[in-house]
Length: 158
Image: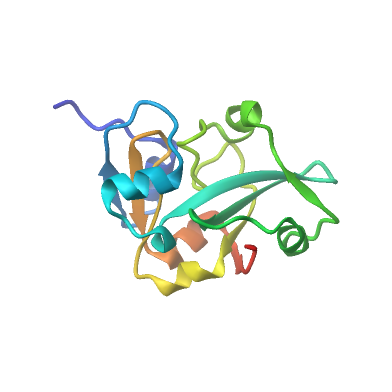
């Protein structure tokens, strides 16, 4: 067994001395969060996905919501002070974030974009987010996730 390859997210957490647990699972292609949660027996409401949007202004915004929920574009736009926002195209994920689809995490993107985490994050001692690559998860305390991403916490789902 070789040394675990650290992602940018893991390096940032280590540098900031933020405690987290790393979960590794077998997966070599994109699978949605619900499929992964089912495979690993994890609760949907505790597992969060990272969505990247672009506003009318041209600014990028990151939203972190439970995997079984849908973003409400009107609420999300209001949360970041935009008239409206839309999801970025899948082909642009790596260019904008430095991560790939299925491995996108709100921690350690190319830039620290305005981030909003859905308020249910506060219902848990730890939440599950992507570890920065396919097959890796980070288990982290909500307050640590909020602090490291400088996120706002509000309702942004349908």
